[in-house]
Length: 472
Image 1 (cartoon, helix red, strand yellow):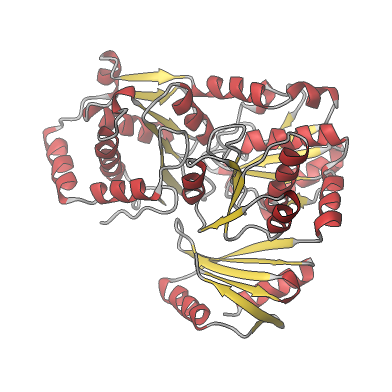
Image 2: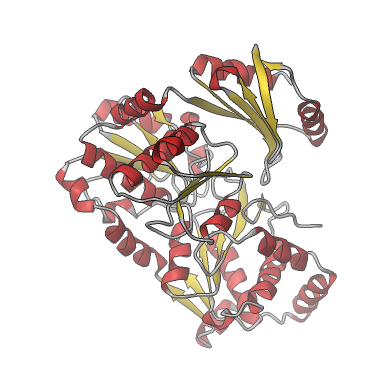
């Protein structure tokens, strides 16, 4: 089979296509790529989250990388994606691999690839690895190794010190303590609840905020029978808990803890779109940071209004953090983000999404402003106008997907009673509508589905736009 990479690496169904044989193929394709990098001798780190067989897939990956002559460090325990990326920078490694399917459901696993700068591999690197993975030479080599049982065991590589364990989590926690004003948060006596969704965020926040309450603070490869993605429908338990126990703020991260979600004191899910805007406002007005703002095509138009106010240039990209990373590596980027909760702040941190870091910054903002999360949102809307948003993921067949995309390509004169003012085709189709609304649709790069996005001044209008989308 041909292994296809999405926006941030390869993801697939465990046991169907995500098998030890295919992980071996991808790992060798990755090894061939890293061997050609000028700093290859520095080594590669392999991390993994709490998904089914995560450690075993990570050990196989480490063995394959080591068999190709690369020095390999493997995370000592389950670890978040940003922790792996940070370890790359702190230890000056050539890159890294993270065994995770991020926010995907439990039946998936994945293979994220990181560059030596501590961020997502760039598109050209991903393409090169994909080609090496699917080459005939790779297939012949792996078949020969398998037939001859030529790949040494994990313990053999460890004994030869070609694979070493690395406590990436400790490196990460120590760095966050420096980046965030933890003492200010403690002095404010914020009542913080955090839900790592049984994922890689387990065992992190309490080391920084011992008084925080942690829900689902155990690794569970089934993620409690829900998908580990911070969305309104997956955070209902957290929202109820916050209201009943009178917490000031609720934080939630996805399966590998690189995405952030939040719930306010009233149990309302705090859109990741507004998290990005709130962080941007704080960085400019309080931390006095400046720079380019890089956001994906599906990010709220409130960002454009903020750019006008602060005199900041806004750069739009296709969906996928690797496109944002590309700009970050050129320098001068203040913040970069996606609508799905992936936010990177290279002006303070690494060029990588970091859910827990962004969550702690939210707490810092609440402590500094002496306002609740709900009050901060109200301030944003008063200043820049209401921007309500929602997304619908449409699981479908390839045939139906093509039909919908063909309709979008042909165009619409109006959507949900709103006149279409313009159409952008950078990534899928984005239709600018009357009243400051917009609708966007695109095919997912990691799952068999279409994503529908909508923003409007009222949630009722957002729902009307998405109802139109569901009828396509």
